Image (cartoon, rainbow, N blue to C red; front, side, top):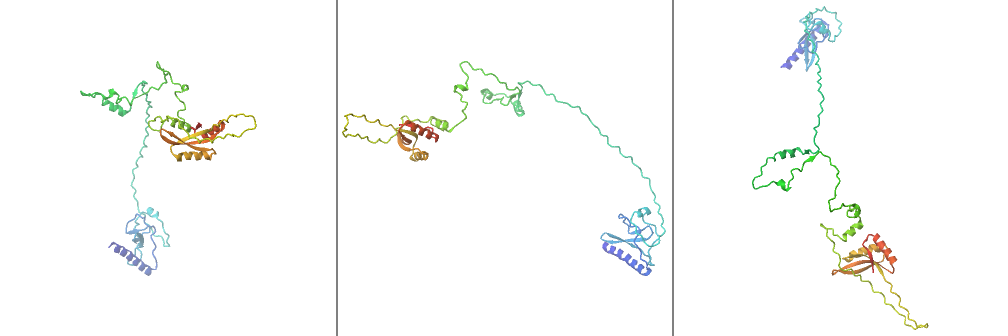
Length: 346
């Protein structure tokens, strides 16, 4: 219903305007001053006194001239807005002769001036600086955590029933376990009690290199102690191992008569052979592995057998050597190869 009314309002003034234009031969122009956007009236009279009607659809406002029965624009009315307010709107120049304007008296009411509020006054409060003075405590003052102190307060008035005893007296629970003192630790000279003597590093009872380990030392330790927890003494053989050496070749004597004077020559002294006993093993593969490693270094390797506590062991030998010098040289090479327990054997 509202939309139909708006269309009717627009169509009727437009028809009247077209008829007036066709008969009068003059085309009315737009308002001399456009009303402000806040103007909500349906009829507007500009500064010339001409009447215009509001028309428009979807928010677009158009001011259409109002015509009378004689098809002429209706003019000569008092302006809707004051002349000063209407002049603020953009004016459009027209070729028509100016129409006498009737100034509308504007009554101005005095406005009461309000004195501005005084700016807030900044207040600065100066507080004297206070420095806390630490309490002077004795170096022997006991210091405990707060929760320990609170729990201890709950146990001061404990009454021990008959037939019971305090646990703290037998040192199973120390009530002073969390206490500390402010006194710094002081180095005191230790006095040796009577009948004792101080342990010095130079007398051999305290080894300064006790935390340094070597492969040789571990091997020597394994010969004495086991690697179990707790350590125990390693079982040492009660009898010395017997090495079965190959039999020497038979000696031949020349019994043919000699043309020289009859003299019996002394038999040549038998040459004693020397070996280097590298290690003994319970199984043949272990002995073979050690022997092959020594053979790759160019050492003559032999194998022997020995019995210890009724058990048979395989011995790895290097040799034989006819003198002590090559035997000692071979012993040094074997020890350099990692077998530090090797020794000379006959």
